[in-house]
Amino acid sequence: MDDTFDDFVRARAGALFRYGFVLTGDPDDAADLVQEALLRLGDTWDRVIRKDDPEGYVRTIMVRQHISWWRRRRREHLMAETPDVGYTDRRFDGDAGLWAELEGLPRRQRAVLVLRYYEDLPDTEIARILGVSPGTVRSQASRALDKLRVQRQPALMEEV
Amino acid sequence: MRTEQDLRAVLRRAADQAAPPAGLVGALRRARRRRRTRRRYQAALAFAGVVIVAAGGSVVFRGGADDSPATNTRTNTKEVAPTTMPDPNVHASDRPAVKKSRPARVVWPQAVSTIPAEAGDGARYSALAALSPTEVLLRADKKSEKTTRIDVYDTRTGVSRVLTQVPVIGNDYRPIRFEVGAEYIGWYAMTPDDTSKGADLWIALRAGGPAIKVAETTDDMPASISGPTDEWPASISVTADSLVWSLFNGGIYRVPITGGSPEKIAGSDGLWLTSWPWAADLPPYQANPDPDHNQTRLVNLETGEKRDFVIPPGVVGLRCSTSWCSGILGRDMIVMRPDGSGLSRVPRFASFEARPAGSHFVEVEGTIYDLATGTTATIGRAKQGKDVAYERGPTSSPTTLFSWEDGHGGLEVLNMLAVDR
Image (tube, rainbow over the protein chains, first blue to last red):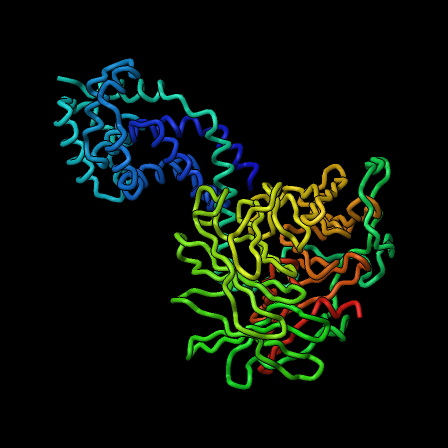
């Protein structure tokens, strides 16, 4: 079992870390999230490789974990130690303002945006992953986009 | 106004710029080992040593004759420090394969006894350790009164005596692992679910007397680092004048039986007690995160003597006492002396569940294998289906007493100190 799991980890840890980073906005939190999710994947590896897609499984664990206990656990830490906005300004080569504003979103709203615009998943799949209705996904996305002052383009949203 | 494409671009750019930490894979591997170890350890605490295995377990028993003497048994018990590597061209000789073994009561009738499952006052017995070939240490629990005491039962005469009353402090506080010394027995007790606390270390005279708490392991102990279970004892020993223990993370401590401050034994970092005065550079089974890892040495804590083992190429999971080693080579168990001599294979008997028992045995999922003679015997009572249940005496050094229900309201016990008599 361990050989195939180790191979998977070696091959996919980088991509999963990047996914964790867009979900959390913080490299340390991303590393924690990936590690915890891969530990859980390792516990069920034999079953997952027989029945499911391990990468999809671990990404689902990551986003659910991020929304639930993990995020709550880390919040105090983040509030205490997150540096000023210059952190992203220094590090981010792009629309640093938009990246920083993502930090201000409730975790579920941010997750919906990441699943929709980074993972390119349809709303029905996002709903399944988060365990909510597609209507909730749409309303959460809509609120998040409003906060970020992102104009919704109907043509691109009808990909379901 | 921003567009959805702007949002996509920001997320992708952020991902592209995120550099995964270099140590992620290694950290995960270490975390998985810690997790496995802690689960195993906590499971061991939770289930108080009850073992249930499918008959035959995961070990393959096939071919050969059982109970035949090993081909390379040495009778010279003098310890020899290893000085040479085994010749790689010399193959391990084959020992007989382990096929269906006979019950311990048949193979070692002098070592198996039936004892009552309850004391005269109704306290429920569970087997802890052998004190001598005819005396066993039993825990006697009276759930109705929430009391626990330790009794000594003489399997020859059927007479028992109370050794000591075990102090129980709070719900779920209980003795975990015991050890028999020449004059004292020792144990540590704790509340396993309360990871904020360490353990209490207790002793009582073998002749009988009150239990005395001699030390506590706490966060203030030197070298106790990171994580709640790191302050838990991994093993204990009782010497003539001290109680000695190693922590989960290694390092060995000593406190005088008469009381005083615990002190760390110099040079004990990276060592775990096996049986006093010996310590290994590998944690005991229940605290070992890596079953592949080979033990490479034993250190005598009294004299400082170090014995390094000769590890044959390809062998994993090597465990050595001062007189015998066993390990895994492919699907075979290998047996040898610590100096590498007498290397032999037991075909298809490899198991990471193998644990040392007595002075020269390994227990593999309900089968006891005598490293000296190659004799095997099975323990346990068949439950529903093919499961076999038994308990290992919860001692810190290799188990000296196995027990299982006899099906008629009694307990059968296998006393490892009586096997060679």
